[in-house]
Amino acid sequence: MNLTVDATSSTPPFEQVRSQVIAQVEAGELVAGTRLPPVRALATELGLAANTVARAYKELEEAGYVETRGRAGTFVKGADAASVRAAGAARAYVEAARRLGVSAEDAIELVRAALRDR
Image 1: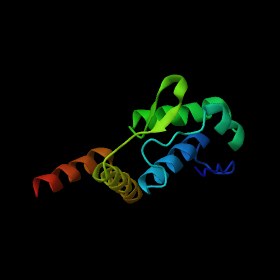
Image 2: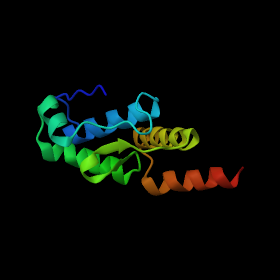
Image 3: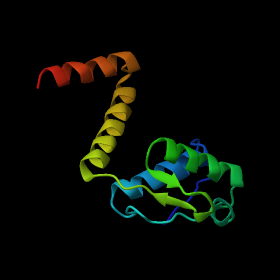
């Protein structure tokens, strides 16, 4: 796992860690069953507070990318390829909608309309 944190970025460090892990999972660089470094070890490596890395891991778990197995550690969760690609497409859509100034409600309605048109 290759992660970096840009201290000068306006993006919070936990978000930088979270988004990089997601990108590596979606690219197939981190496969199901891969054990992530312990929170404290990764925090030390990146020069972050342990709580920052813990928050990133918690959000990754809530999003379904990883699972914590108690003292055994945190592991990349298995997901079928279609789900991973769909999640990536959804994030790309959200980013595009935000750049265009489309509200969340309108963006959701556009998706609903597109699904009805199938």
